[in-house]
Image (tube, rainbow, N blue to C red):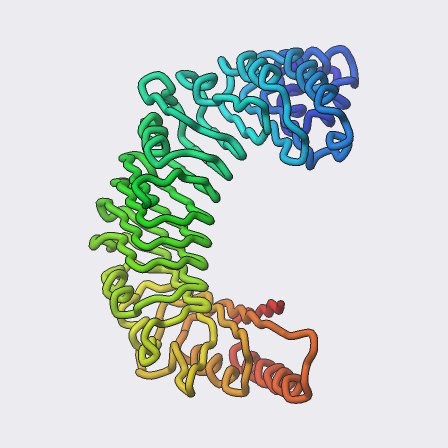
Length: 419
């Protein structure tokens, strides 16, 4: 241990991340204390790491954080996550950021201050590559002054910002590749909430818990789009056909448009969503390279619409991972077994139920017959705590059927996941 270079010791301490652990470890000897001061590159203060943080007064906590940060030079990653702590003084937080901003590459910031601290003004025009802001207000973005020339990832959670400032902030990041928006409070203009974002470098966009009248995303190089728990009247993606992964979970949207060029789509994941199947099918049917398809707890706008395996098999010949939830409505089984085409490339099959009946086992067997090279079968089920005799009997019958089925398909690896 005595022969370890101080740079290596600095890396070891950086992997600890939590400030309290770093301070304790650096007390090993003089050499380790020196490594902490000169070669530590990652440090985290989080109220989840050490419960005592919540018991300290904010003044005492500010002193502890200030003493620790000012002893370290060359810090590259700083996390200050104090969600459960009372408001800090703005002067202390500004001092921390001013001291570290020259070398900082990553900043994870969730601190309540009085007054609000303008992170963009302090950290703009420097080397920041990852910026994760929570519970903050962003007002009056100046893209020429508050510019982030190296920023690749931007995450805004529970942030108050106007639609205009959000667009200006994204445009102030000429190298941005990943954008996350979680429950932002977006100011309303003319009685409508409309967001228009444009970036030629964006590759991944994640949007959660947002309510808008209109959301227009112009991203020529986007590859991954994930919408979760959103209420949107109109969502439009303007791109150049680079989208590879599209995921929707518990989203309400009246008009959805992900563009006409979808040949590069490899993964589509739709869950807890009501879709107009003809329009949606028309949207993704040209995705002949699709490898993963998940339709889970999907409602169809038209009760007469049925999606059968024949449609899936013929439209997506490269499909290797298929996930379907068992759904019977008015005696009609969605994802029925009509047709004779096999799912020739499917190696992973995930099937599940929310309400089980005796036909589920037959449905599983029918799907297995259509997947000649299947390697893995995953069954998802929901089991209620209070079970009637009928439910117990159906579960028993299902268990027996699965045992018999797996004896015939010995090359398939079965997994069961129950809630």
